[in-house]
Length: 372
Image (cartoon, rainbow, N blue to C red; front, side):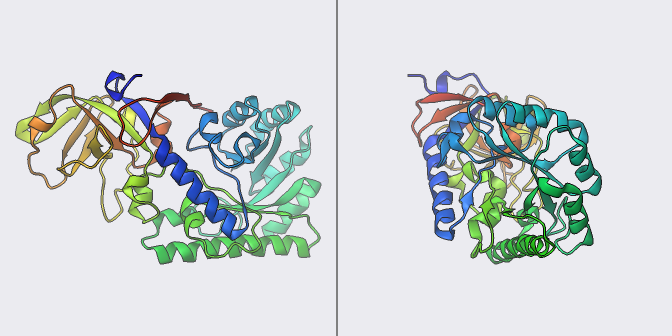
């Protein structure tokens, strides 16, 4: 059996034991709250990971690209929500997916997009995207535009959805709990407005990993979408959603040199392997381009982070600026880097190398899809 020492670096490592624990924890929360989980597969982009999720390839799932929808449909998953506002130029692609058996639902937040859907040759179900936190896209739950868009959609309307992305900027558990209630209440209020006006709105879809983790009440919600909870990352750890040991994903890198006078360890894990995401930069603890651990995934005696990254070079140093013990990290030795953002780091790689806990054996290799 191959071990981590047999892999060519950089390589994307997935700890199956941690993955399974994360999946079980979230499913148990949704079961307690009495709501269906519609996992967001944009983080994993892998049918093998989906097979580990409760419900597996029966779905339902959430995707962020139509290529993801194609990939999962090819593996037998039909119940798919495309959770990015539909561009009119993609309606033909979406219709083609439905002709191949996809039960594909779209989202939108404008009258123009709603009219484009109505003009399309194939009638496609739609959720109206809501803005409950001022973070990104969507219609205010109280806006007159909500009813205008509903009227334009006619019988294509299936309900509402929202994503409390501002939860990623919360600085306490209490703030995330409040954001989860703000998300729930806004979505339920919008659905109630639609129903009162005579429009169909059976679906009330909410979700983000932080709000799904800490929501106290999901009354009126029909489904929750979350994705990064499967792997977790340093951003989630930084806002208290998970512990460092809950991070299932890491990048295996090789030490290729030292700059001792600068206190630097040089690796072959640059931003092409780690991504340029600096999501922890504004958090209480800035993790640079990633937190460094030993080849077994355990914490090191020294607090090391990737302080800078070029395309194929990563520069590791002690957080406190002191010189590391270079004898611990000889040229050719292996280290693992925990990612700031699991989605961005995963997108740099074509496959996962599976391990179980701290054991060095590689117990499998799972392919993933990328692109649009």
